[in-house]
Length: 213
Image (cartoon, rainbow, N blue to C red):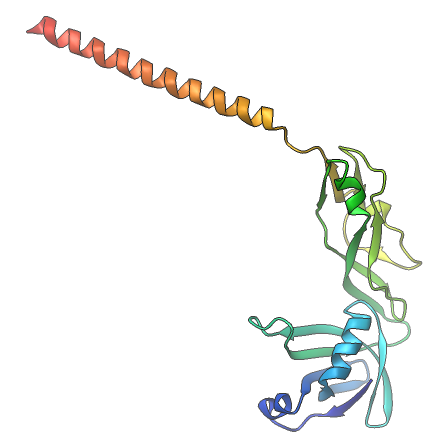
C-alpha cells in the first residue's frame, strides 16, 4: 500500500476521498500521512488489527500494522483517522484477535444454547506472524460443555494474555418453560398468603376496637 505525507487540512482530505492517519514507531518520527480511501478499506479488510503489512512512504518501505482506527460514531463505515505502527523483525505485537465460532448452527439445531463469552482475545505474537482470527469448532458439543483459552490452536510464539482456564464458549440447555411456570405459581401463592394474612390482621384489629367500645 502506498502512503503520502499529509499537509492538507482534514476536511480537504476527506472531500477528496483520502483518509488521514499517522505513522510512528522505531526509527521514524511520527509522520502525518494520507491514503486513498479504497486502498485503506481493501488493506484493512485484508489485515485487520492483528496482521502486519508493508507500506511505501517517500520511496521507503515500512513493515506496519493498524494500531488504531477511528470511525464515525454515527456512520460506522466512515473512517475518520488511523494509526500505523512501524515494527522491526524482532518486535512482539500485542493485539486483540477475533474469535470465530464454527458450526454454531449444528449445536443450536439440537435445541442447545451457544454463548460466546470472548469475542476477541488479547494476544502477544511475533512481528510478521499475525493471524486474522482464532477458530473454535463447537460441532458435537453437548449441554454443559465448554471451550476454554487452553483449547485455542495457537501458532508458534502466540501467547494469550488471558488465563488459560477462562471459558470462551459455553453450551447450555434452554430454560424449561415448566420451571418458569412453577416459579410464577409459587410467587402467586406467596402473594395470596400475604394478602390473606393481612386481612386476618385487619379483622383482629377491628374486633379489638369493638371490645374496647
